[in-house]
Length: 148
Image 1 (spheres, rainbow, N blue to C red):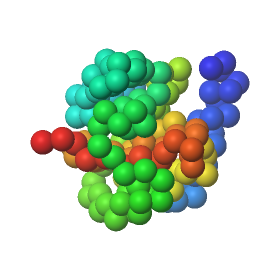
Image 2: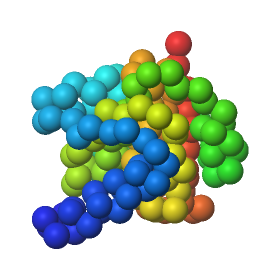
Image 3: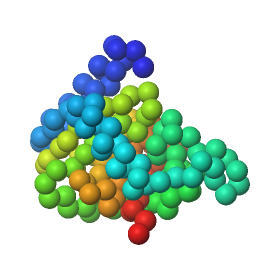
Image 4: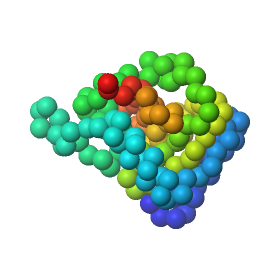
């Protein structure tokens, strides 16, 4: 992703957060790395599906689209996401390998579907996650709960 495209991508996202009255702070690189690691540990995926299809990390939501981690999809996913009550901080990370950025947020959980962007939303303790995708309606969004 070139700098101009990245800037426009982030500006669109921040405009949605502002409109939803979300308070947010960009994560520093070290913070992003730690939060990203916590998410990937909570929502682990094997390298290959049961039918030997590779599970790529290019888009982190593929662990849901390939069925290697149970999830709700489409409107049922959105409805479950809307039911979540987050007290305190929550995180928003890029789910796209080409764009490693994230935010620490407080406030209401925003509807990010109209952005058609690859984003993960989850509470400080990643007990659940909502994965928004650029393929909304074809693949995703997905709502998943961390396996016990």
